[in-house]
Image (cartoon, rainbow, N blue to C red):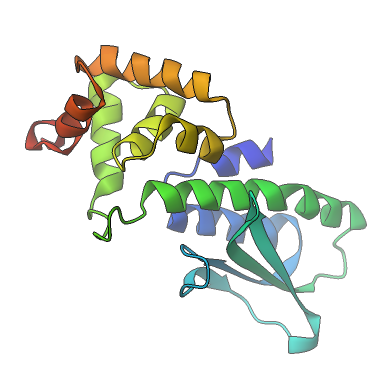
Amino acid sequence: MIGRELSQCAEKQALGRAIQTLVRTHLGYQRVALWSQPDEGGASELLCVAGTAPAASVHRYVLEHRGRVVGMLELGARRADAGTADEQVLCELLPWIAATLEHLTVATAPVDGKPAVAGLTDRLDRCRHRWRLTPRQSEVLALLVHGRTNRESAEVLSCREGTVELHVHGLLNRCGAENRVMLTALFWSDDTHG
């Protein structure tokens, strides 16, 4: 349930805030820091940091999704009243956090060396409302407009390629496009932004 809620975050900063609240309030950690690593071996981006803890009490969790490091979660100094069941919850959430972080990184990643367009989240929101898209169609759209194939999208979304094809077909019908190229053009046109 909590993992599904985290996976609904629309941007990395929102994910960071949600994890910060969860880890500090519900799991009893006094310090939390979340990093995103967009590229293998590239510079990490600090998404959130809150609290303090002695260095000896800090635990680092490498976040991996599909064999690729996508970030790191650093936690430190648990409250005395935090139970061991909470530790199990954290272990179960780590794969959800990694998958969501990977999805948000791919959805906003530069394409062909060009930086991601500012306001991508706003544009996605406008298209979602204008075309009355489901949350999954919105995820597929974000990947599609960045040139991801159905197979690549299926890997990111942890579903079958045929499922992505069905969502693409639904997207084409909802926005009145004949093909992926037209859909991408409609997405980036000023008409959908206004």
